[in-house]
Length: 219
Image (spheres, rainbow, N blue to C red):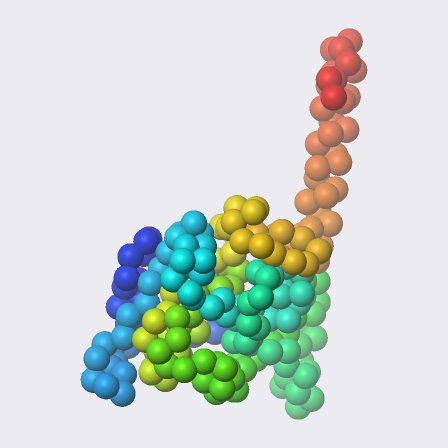
């Protein structure tokens, strides 16, 4: 499975390493075959191609993002099966890691402290047969690729992912719901606040430059 592939069917050859925040941090080659002895495949498609898979070929959308991003924006009528879930364990090691996370990644990026969902594959299998057509979506494309890897090993044969994830989907491509656009669902925390402050400061500086030049900025 070539993560950087575009608009083609690619063979899945990767194992993924994950960070506690739920981000895929690395991957390595891993050769395997499914239960039938056939090497499974996954489609990596562009947003417009993904829309056709759903509307014309009957693919079901499975959103594998965490709960917070899913609640911010999601494709209508999708199924939510998170690849990572919030880690509320209370052992000393987890408490320390969660505190560090909340003071940095959680504060700046609005990311929850998560762990792999041990019931991910079974949850999908309880809702879909191995022959089901599934479009897996996440925010940046890496979690959906990792989810595809797991489901292929479990025997699923008709899987597609959006290259670069929902962040690359133009507004209006899918019917969506939530309080923001699909491509913005990953933005939160101080990064969002900083972006708004930068926009305001930029506007002020532009207005000031026009004032010094004796001009009035057009609206």
